[in-house]
View 1: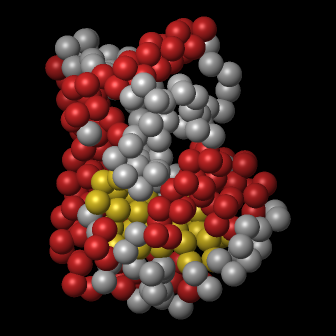
View 2: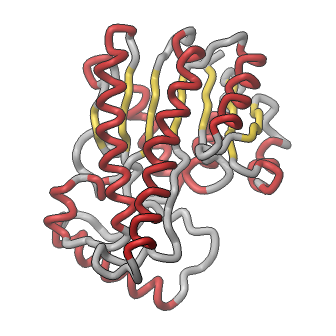
Length: 267
């Protein structure tokens, strides 16, 4: 019975990973959420998926991650096949700023540190804590969601300069995954930094301002890739594409930073 841990599983892409994995009754799926008691959609899914286990797991709380790993070990006998690092820190209040627009030095520094704490240190803690279980698993695949915005060529080509704390921390995350890849390659591990593409995971209708911002983003991205139709992927489609990539990658691919198409096509 393949076993999966998905972090940040209460909504969006993480919830969709859990939904698709749990559709196969031969899978054992562990959905980690910072506040599982508030994860209504996750609990609704659990009502019909007997192979789904909802567990508290906060990337900023090492003790909660250790407790989560202990719960997983009790169910699986101490092993884990797949770790999907989906959880991430995204700034809402300052997402529209570029690096010169923060109101003061402390706000910029606090945002950068908060993003790094979750998106880099939090992922490292998660991998290290689940590593003993993964070593006993059969797949030994660790998939960490990144973004095409962590590719410097994309930033330079599109001029996309807002929410810098997110793309900067994700670029550091890609390097973290490369370090794990070379460190654990001889043990048969496969590490992957995987971009889900542009995905519409919004849980409420966009404001008129959001619509205008998205139109501007589409224009920039289409200048970078004229073949892109400007339509975001649904979480269902994005996860389906990523699952195909996850299934196909092997030891030769460990440490790669690729898209939902298995290449460097980000859109």
